[in-house]
Length: 319
Image (cartoon, rainbow, N blue to C red; front, side, top):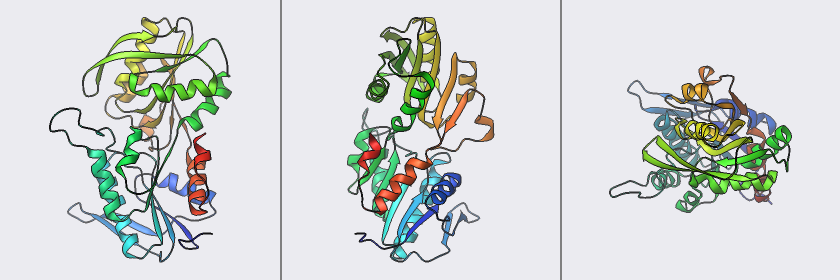
């Protein structure tokens, strides 16, 4: 029994309207009427153009670049829906920004991820639906339900079709120790070996490859990570796999293709043959180079939204 209202509505901010449109169409709906813009001084302006009283509202908004504008759009839209008496408000955040500062790594560091969790709750979100949080423990920063979908659920079957399962010439590689659990999920689904890049990070967005743990010589390798930002870690790892490990061919995949700064140039000049990302973050035309292939996430988010609305289990989508 649906206790939160009988009508579902999908709304979108300006970060990823195409994804919101695809989700709405797959649910047999249209994206809700909302005008999200700016006042002349740069403040975010939101106007909801239809009633949401008693409705189950889903707001689709990735907090990607421009991060601050997209985050404020989301918060103000949630506040507008709460004040308009929406039955339940779910923040659908395919890419959750500000997630990299999830703990105090040194004295006087902020914990930005916790701050964002507090902001979403204060604005009036009743639930969060996201994908591949940078750190799984961020779920614990919230006092509301958080469904964290897994990119491997989409990526692993795709690569099983592309490269096969239980093959001896294919190795999954974690580009750092922090991504080992994610890479291990791939190896379990594809039943292939795992290798790990051991590196020492000198400063933010700069890394130095130190060692390769595992056998990659004359193998096809797949680097697996949750996000590609400036692509420094990824491209250094790819170079090490070829120059030090003797890998035959290097592929890469990540859930979030942030691709900021010199990322595109680095990937272009790297030994990576193909880089696969999900469309949790919209890619501009100049970032859609031949080496990058984008895979859709709309069906998984559609299914998750449908299950949340129907009060049925979402956990099946994690396997």
